[in-house]
Amino acid sequence: MAFRLPGILHGKKTLRRSLSGVKEASLKSTTIPKGYFAVYVGEDQKKRYIVPLSYLNEPAFQELLSMAEKEFGYDHPMGGLTIPCREDFFIDLTSQLNGL
Image (cartoon, rainbow, N blue to C red; front, side):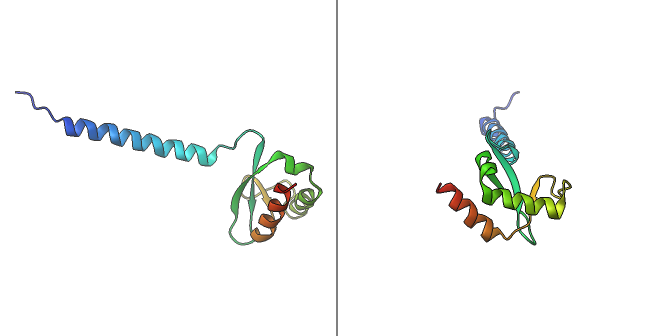
């Protein structure tokens, strides 16, 4: 005698979709779009920001890179480019660069 449990089968499909959504979300959090790069900013707790490559041409951003080079050299503890400045200063600078 066979039992049909359509509700359980539907539940498995829903779970599979939600798990694939988790995988996609985790990929999106680690994937950087073309034309951008990741930096870590903050004094105590580092926060990750994705910024456009065009910032590399800006003198103000180049100054931040010089600060990072002086403090860390080429050994960045977060595994990515770490900029040693306050987060509020970085946000102000990048918002000014966005306005250019």
